[in-house]
Length: 210
Image (tube, rainbow, N blue to C red; front, side):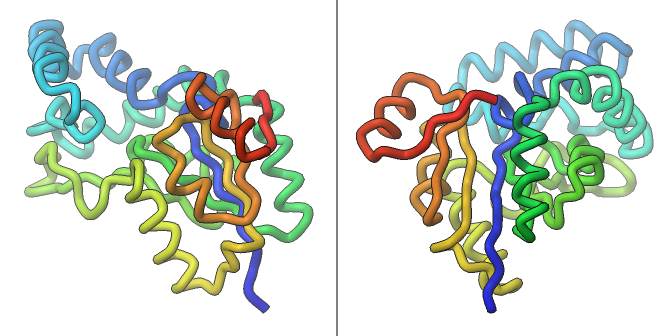
């Protein structure tokens, strides 16, 4: 029989705040990114807001071996205290019911691997970066897990592992999660912003506060 999945967005759903923003600030505070380089990067984002979620150029040229320990520090010091107890309890309820847990986020895969381990999630779908010669290039490998790409990636996962999406659950906070929420039989709006809250009420989707 096909399995039921519970698919959780991370930022502002399971974690209070934006994990990659916390990581960027951590890299600046520990000196891996200089203040000048940080300002240049932020200025570039301001000039190209449509690309702000895909632009990982702040890591271009950084040594992988230098970045990964900082990611672990950031998770331990900045992200772990922001994990929602209510959200984590909800996840554990799904586990107890035998549901497969999927973490789905546009944040960085190596930054949130500890969350996958902590939650006992079977799968983590997150942004993977291209590496060359032990350095990050700043480019994304594969699909960026945001918007409609979230739905595409979950459909691929369901085909590979026999998940029944019509019986599955998805939790998201933003209108960009709509393609994912529409994909499953049990969508849940978590800490929704105004537009998603209005849509959830129109469609009579559950609204939860994590």
